[in-house]
Length: 201
Image 1 (cartoon, helix red, strand yellow):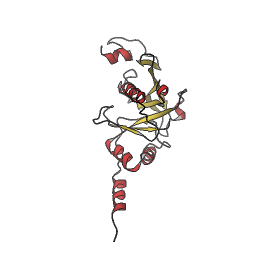
Image 2 (tube, rainbow, N blue to C red; image 1 turned 180 degrees about the vertical axis):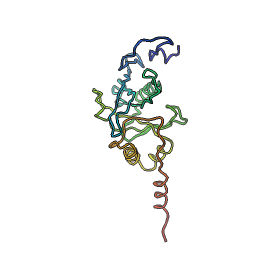
Image 3 (cartoon, one colour; image 1 turned 135 degrees about the vertical axis):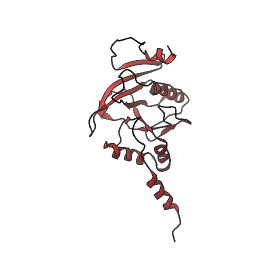
Image 4 (tube, rainbow, N blue to C red; image 1 turned 30 degrees about the horizontal axis):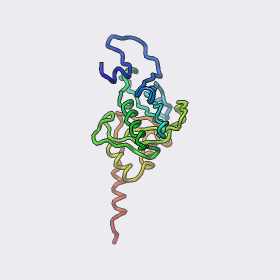
């Protein structure tokens, strides 16, 4: 059994114990914990089944607590949620100890796709409809494709949030990440931005 399996309490093969959500994990003893909830987030297209990861312990270092909701596909078993968000919470905690914080409108980027196959995360306001009873200030994190991350750098977070909101008919921006969704195209916006800088005759 791996170190992360021990932390997350993964059941061994053949173990048929029923999983009870939310599940509490101690990521850094006496300093950082996380809970994983089984949620359905309401939308105009119907309920969106998600695993929602919530940190507890970041605010001690002035970093807002993180919420990360990941859409489950019909073939996902409810107890087979990815460990990546839990590892990410630990990384954010380590940065917060150094006084390096993220807030709404910021983004995180990895050199290689190492977070559920993505390189980018954008931070948005928490969605009150999720009703997670947060005791400390918080913000939500959502996955971005390479093109979406480039658009955020070029045009700012608002345009990316608006485009995501339009695509999923969820105002102002869907609070969940979907590993299966196609990337949004910002080709037209990029071309218009380039044309705006070209001298006219």
